[in-house]
Image (cartoon, rainbow, N blue to C red):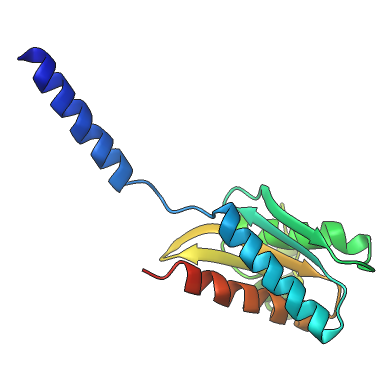
Amino acid sequence: MKKLIFLLLTFIVAQVAIAQQKPFLSLDAAKKMGTLAEEKSEAAGYKMNIAIVDDGGQLVYFVRMDGAKLSGLDIAIKKAVCAAYYEASTESYQKRIADGTLQLIGMPHMLPFEGGVPLKVGDTVVGAIGVSGATAAQDGDIADLAVALFEELTKD
């Protein structure tokens, strides 16, 4: 009888743990977003670096398009890390600094140039995308297209 109760309790605890599991960024979703961002960049004539990180800022997916600037490699990753770390778009920090909130510049992982956008499932940030290679606004446009795809992929 004790074994049966133990097994039943173990099963219940396992089910609760599964039900409470937080959402995450899958490699499949990251690949689809990266592919879309690459295709849209190619169609627009941009040579981009595209980085997708998880909620801890660790790289999940990266592509450096042919002809993309080497400097953009680090910038794309840092935009993604900034958006994941602070759970806000890098564009929002670009605007705040332009409005005079200069102390943001010294914050860790801060890269206040448009093109970094967090990825959310509900209210939970599961990662971010960072794009670099064109103007900041164009980087942001490509990132936003990938985020829209992510939102479609993660709809309930």
